[in-house]
Length: 188
Ligand code: XMP
Ligand code: MG
Image (spheres, helix red, strand yellow):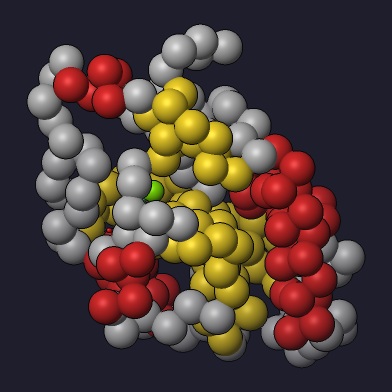
């Protein structure tokens, strides 16, 4: 699939699946079963976090529930501006719940800091973030993320939910794109 489009594999399917399991173990320790806040509520950020969310939920040895949000940040397709619009909101009230935001990648951190402010205003019982990937620029933001899958170099990556122009999400690994793919439309 996508023969010749991927320049290098950054994280193999095995590496991702191993890390998902260890993150799940860390998360389970933080959320004791039978808490008065009820089951842990995973809030997946569409569409990039979809595979991470489903794999993580199945690796977690505690009961979880799922909600999804879709947001779009104004800006080019490969960088974000911090101005965020809700495309799809949560279906349920999260007041009093233990909420864990499940993100694909933190780059500038602008999207996530907006999301945290937005969800905090709904008075969850607790609010934390798990992200599969973090890029170097993320350290400049005030967003405090305790659970990180992998720190990666400052390169545009695709696969395992991450896309370029909606393609490559279905790859089971994470890789960098051959520059010939995006040199055509000059959007980087
Ligand atoms: P910020 O800068 O707000 O951006 O932290 C987070 C969002 O930007 C997208 N993003 C990427 N998407 N490959 C992608 O497919 C990448 O390398 C990449 N870097 C940032 C992504 O939507 C993320 O939620
Ligand atoms: Mg995203």
